[in-house]
Length: 222
Image 1 (cartoon, one colour):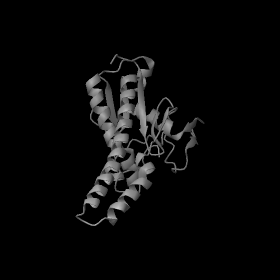
Image 2 (cartoon, helix red, strand yellow):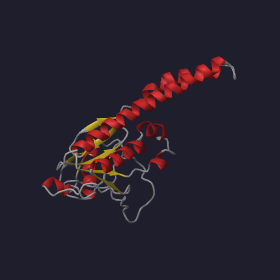
Image 3 (cartoon, helix red, strand yellow):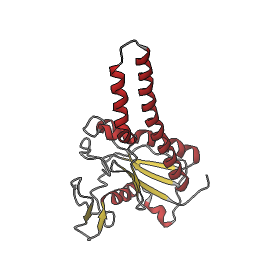
Image 4 (cartoon, helix red, strand yellow):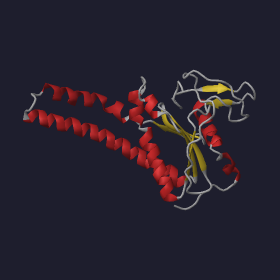
């Protein structure tokens, strides 16, 4: 892919699958949620079939195909989005989300449906293949609490607060876009907007903030 001077920060979430530091919001397709009714129906049909019968085997294959269809649709979405981001940006910054921890919470089904880990893996191998820079910042970076304009840490916000005004500089922020900008800044990519080159090919190890305090109580961009 040809080199580009564009860089982007990504805030992954559930309400939107991804929000970019340039303000772009990418809706979450929610493939599993949309197919849930059909999956329940096929599973119910399977449970009614006699064990060991040919009809049960047919019903089992029907259930498997229904789940495979959901997985294929999700994988195709991840491929298209990751390819677009890699092709358009020389440097990409993303937060290293605690997927395993969130998968043990009440958000488990939504986290599984989003497939963040699979998407991150695609970004990583495509960055290596095409000479892009992918930087994962520490999961405890307070990206949703810091004003991306003046840098003041304004404290945690309830999940229902989607916009907030910085108490220091008065800037009105979209919660998720602000977080994506802070992801980009924390990764050291913000300077590239001024024309500084981004070193291609490197995929630095994740950087953890000192004084970590366990899993966050809220996933980014929910």
